[in-house]
Image 1 (spheres, helix red, strand yellow):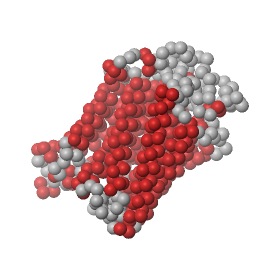
Image 2 (tube, helix red, strand yellow):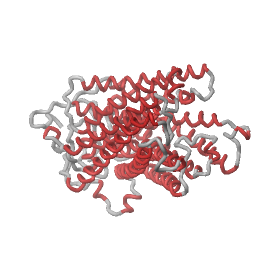
Image 3 (cartoon, one colour):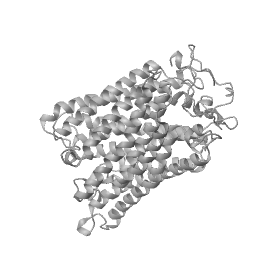
Image 4 (spheres, one colour):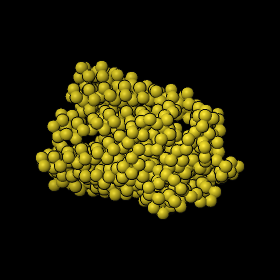
Length: 549
């Protein structure tokens, strides 16, 4: 960290009490822990492992696409690879990453609580997540899956690959999301410190709260849908099979009624992190606090009404298409409120271009591209041309990877010292951020051009005219992979060789910065009392010390 980012341990934070890392020893103390911080760390390690699995599959896909001919894998292997990439990244990485890892670790700290409302339920949710992940891993070794992460019928009802184990895995993972969401909602309502009113909650808490609402309301729909596929395959009941009186389009309605809200389960936590990064590292009160907070709730509500924009070409009525198109544009309004508020916060702020801020700025750039290109897909006329092309691939990755994952990496850097008590190399981190930024945009930006030119997604062979763009995407993918690998290396290296961190290196005001780094097992000595909002930043003098603690 630079000298300006170094703070001193607050006088009311004893530095001698053992941290949560040292409180209990042994593997069993971790597997059966009720400490939300340890569970957050275990979620972090788990999602990082699956990020490596999903990323490796992506690199194999991009290697195949270097040439127009299928000269490395067969079509069947290619289909299994992109299914592994999509399913692992969505169900095992993006959805659980921020709520499971950072949410578990930070939510009670930000609320001034000693733990979540239901610690045993929290442990159960991690065990359920692990069980669901094991079903996915079994699928990889039991012939794989070739349906794509959406499990579209009628193909998923008839393919000979391991649909049942994969859908059961996703079904089980849904219970983990529901339990986590329930726990977080009760924690926010009942465990806030004295003085921590709704108008004083950190925006990270607002984002996690809105995410939890969607998790509870939408996830049961997916669970039932996947269970119906399992029943159809095992009992030969024609729920989605038109030959037996079923309707395959019904599956799309069920799936997207969950999966479009699930897009916001994935991106709302990214918004939550972004608000903290922009405010803290520009040393300026967040612009439009209430607008950002309430826009998270508005997104959670409107997200349930837009699933039909995935089905403009599925034969639904023109009136339904117009309504869903209008609602798609409507859900962009609260999202735009957030983006404009972040930009206004940066205006005349005392910006320090450290690694968390670099990822915060990267998020605004990449997510804005993802959001604006979504308008083309929400418009009836242009969606007909762009549907199922690489334009959709680029848009989705700019929102999910350029949004959630970029914010997640930024959040890891922002709270790394709080979680592990050590600092990483700022120089190495900036190199990693540069590689990630260049690699990501080189991989996906030109895919908008591919889609506009008519290159269909999910094809492993293509016309020679598209090869140049595919070669650029593949080179970019390897740069992106190198950036992520470099990031993992210096973060892991800091655990052994990093300098000891202070309790508040960024001079943050929210409650998690008023504990030692890493926190003690019960978080706080006594119950903190909140007297101001979390973005009322003090002035910093030339030595880098705040004028108050």
